[in-house]
Amino acid sequence: MVIVAAGRRRQPGQSRLDLAVDNATMLRDIIPAILKHAPGAVLVITTNPVDVMTHVASRLAASG
Image (tube, rainbow, N blue to C red; front, side):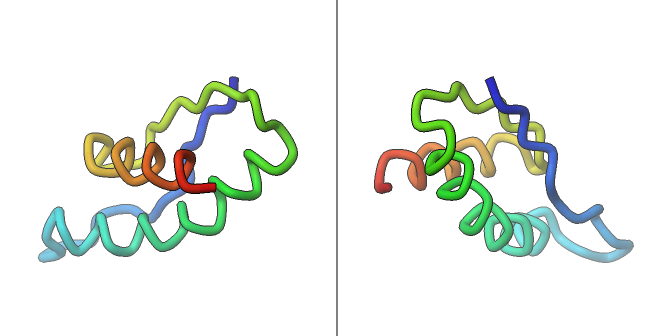
């Protein structure tokens, strides 16, 4: 099991979707690296916005 808690904090005035774009960019690097070293890992995503980031991580894991 790998807990992914990487991400930026929401800044004043920043929308939830803007935060999602920033944090999805990070996950695009992190998820493939995790799966390269631990291909059978169960990923637990705690990065906000957690519902969107879980979807992004799931798509990244399935594609690579």
